[in-house]
Image (cartoon, rainbow, N blue to C red):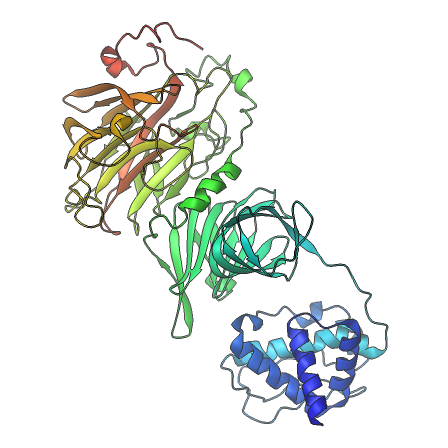
Length: 605
């Protein structure tokens, strides 16, 4: 083989691996491989080198019998129906004879790359694919097909791309196999299976199919909107498969990080389904490569990594349609609050998944299911109830996390308008047993609302009731009111400090049930705060929102923090209710503290 022939052959191998080989080039390559043993040896060596440079080329191969035309080639005597390399293959010369009417065999060849089985499987199958698709040149080649478009760019304002051709389309279409890099900005893509994918720069990725993408580096967050929930993110050392969720993936130098915001995902290290692990609501995990092996470690998520993407993704989580059964349930006398958002965690009401935790669905005034951060394990408990005897409530345990938060968004119903004054009330109890909890700024409790889900409080929230174990020692060194409940008054600004935190004089008592409520005045961006423990009641009217410029702030959060990811900061919660502001709807035990406000007296919907 001459130098020019070798160069031409290597160029064809390269285009074949990059899926850029034309029909005529494929026919010529098939002739060369069929007639030249030297070319076949060079081909396997090229695949060895290519796989060592690009690990993803050595992918798991399906049964050869499933390839198009395989049976016909076996009948014609061109292929051995059991082309395979034994697991105990000895070192030896490669025998690759594929002349006319001879059978292909790969026996005893050991390439330099360590993943012997995968490389030879990839090499053999790629060669067989070439032979099958061109039918050993006895049949005409396949006709050219137009590119398959798998996704569209919905929005990419202020984004800078590499690899995106200039198009006049308002929503540029992306084809399978397209390789892109987002250099700046945040882009929103919609795949053909109706999955919304948000990509944050800098990121590099490929479009694979209408329901999958390959992320090389960077950060994405997605929400599956279609009927089938199986969108897959292919990462360098794992596959992350949607199972009816919204989740985020980050590929960086430390490995691949996965966080589950809603539902669950399946993670397969090294794309090995036998080692798959299901991650549930609020889970965060890192897939790391060490000593040639890929493993899954639960970890404390980096604070704020997905915050910007979640703010955008929340718009896609919404289902703004009112609950279809609201009008019918309005006449149900057995239900005292049929059309207000409320949560009693009663298993008898789980037929539609409305009143459960992990399986909650939108409806009864809720737009979303529960979303979470911090690996929550929630169970409906009956013993040691927060109110009454045997009354069901939600008991939450967390682990491997610093921020531990559950949240849900409410909306308007047939008889409830959240843009008018309304009351949010709940029962809460701290059940943590870790003795060192309560000595750090990061040991905290926070109840707050926002326009979207976030795992901790920040300056863009509206109302805020909190508690912290100490002043902040590292970082901004913010001052708090150690070991006592406080409420935030945004009248004096949005910074965290003595001028904005109102001391309730009440301590956090583990095991004591707290009754809490906020009375919201959306038009003036103000709220009243009410806290009651086993001894006293605190009430403060007309506090200012921390962020007076927010919009709906209908996502209510129940959060704890711990300075140790293994610390026990578990809590229980019950009777979450969102109701119009009427004196008869204020929780009975707190009603005597609610002042008569002429602007709301007699208010009804």
